[in-house]
Amino acid sequence: MQKELLNQAIEIFETYEKWNAFIELTNQKESMKWHFFKKLKQPLLTYFNNNPVSGWICEPWGNHDYDLRWYLKDFGKNSIALAIGWTFHFVLHIEDTTGFDTKKIDDLLRSEYSMILSSFDRVDRQFEHQLKVVEVRNYSFNCPYDTNFDNTQLDNLAWFAGYETESFVKQIIKKVERFRQDVDLTNMLYNLNAESKIRTQ
Image (tube, rainbow, N blue to C red):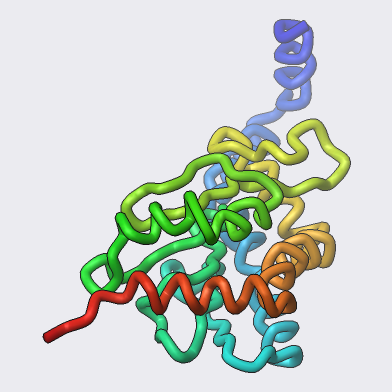
């Protein structure tokens, strides 16, 4: 089957001009991919700017082209926050592990604050030094890679960012709003920050 597809592809390039055009397009693939991902930033910022929740801040971070985070204003940008990062993982992240006790965060999430973990659609990794919960690119577009866009599928995920932008944006919003719009979860994140903050003498 692979050989058959290869032979069919080879027949497309019967002229040097077609082959050269293909090479030029292939060389642009990475630029096109990141261009598609950038399309998600503005509709997300527009939504969260137009739908503020008291006490919450939304801002670009990390790779400012498409990474976003949501944190509690009272604790600042270095605190425990929700984020879209590492090319669209949804995470619970601690920016400053000198200002917050990362081990204590783990212990609290294992006990009275475990509802935070269970409020993610899926937990693929947890209790790392800065990444307390990682949901790895769990998005659905009615395609074979649904819920499992691993690193080998970033090219495919980029297409959906470019051409099914609204669906992609809505899925991110749903993940974040589960926390922002829920008073109990917001209070839990507030208390988690308060209890893990390292007090200076």
